[in-house]
Length: 194
Image (cartoon, rainbow, N blue to C red; front, side, top):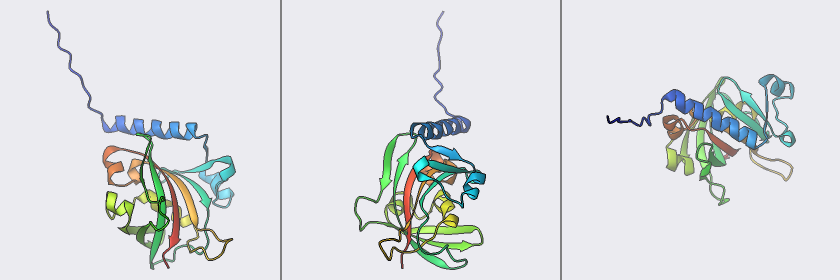
């Protein structure tokens, strides 16, 4: 009697989402990040304590966010198109590798055009590493912090541009993240182009 065993390597979307959740949980634990609630975040004046390695979990988007610097300048004006310059690095939580970055050359940046309408943001990359790697689409996760940041340009030694760290689930990520159900960690600075 001969038995034939079939190997089923097919992963369901549910399997991929579980791997994503596990990768995020492992990253948070291994990095000793402390997750705080939105209520705590709001009570702290929409800030996170970097010395305590706090990340706020934003339930609506599923993004984890740490505000390293709130920035200098103003919030994005409504119904006005603005150009932002971003420097970042991207780390794949599943592959455990840095997958994209523009921070090695200080003259290098990604430029996005963005407009705020109420609490909604629409944006597209016009140049840079994200643009050349993933296209013009700006991941929704990159826009989540904007309502909490002051965006301007560094005009003195005391002023600092906005900087955040994000854990972005696939549903808020770029096309590769969405297609393969990959979460990414980002460290991003935002400043106005002019």
